[in-house]
Length: 262
Image (cartoon, rainbow, N blue to C red; front, side, top):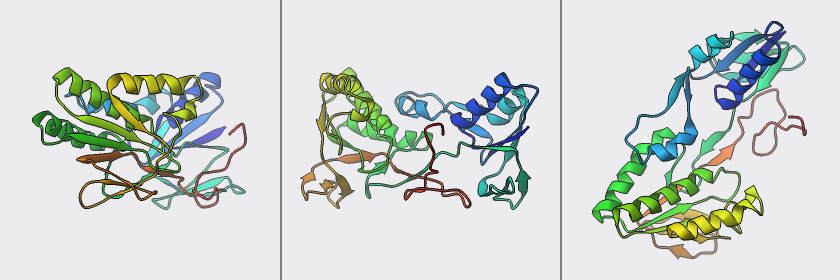
């Protein structure tokens, strides 16, 4: 069976390894990724506070170890009836089964804020910490945008910043502003109070049910209510949008629609 996996992140690699474990002699696997490097993005928040190089892995080597082939390219369109795909290079590949692990597009959500996506913004956070240590900055606001986003890295950054300030005995105020009613309430009634307690313990002020819109010329964070929050720097996570692949159904945000089984 010829299986084509579109994507080069953890979902794609897990699917490839699972197929090899479950049906090693019965599948031929091709991985299509626009990068030959697998970046360990969850480590980016901690890397911002440590002088360590980004954690990356050779996707070609991982594919070879799993007996799969890697094609560095990008999925552009799918013809489900023909069981074929078109790539960005205009090459066409046939498949018996197609696995989509293409992730999401990260777009700026709060104009004027530093948008933290992954390892590419680590040096910005390091510089921000340097300015806090020197006394150039006093108040940092971490802002979660309304809509589809992944706020967990922002909570990690806020906690790490507050912890580092305490360790260095440096004065500074850390705030986290979010449309959420309670901290990380998407994780449920047990996890959210634990996160709230941790924020309070580390001295991070949480302001919920607020909708951050933009950073004005003075550096203040403007909310949808018209209120402003004074800040020396504002850090935000991006909004997420689906890839909108031609030939595949998608919702209004561009994400591929699925049932309970994916």
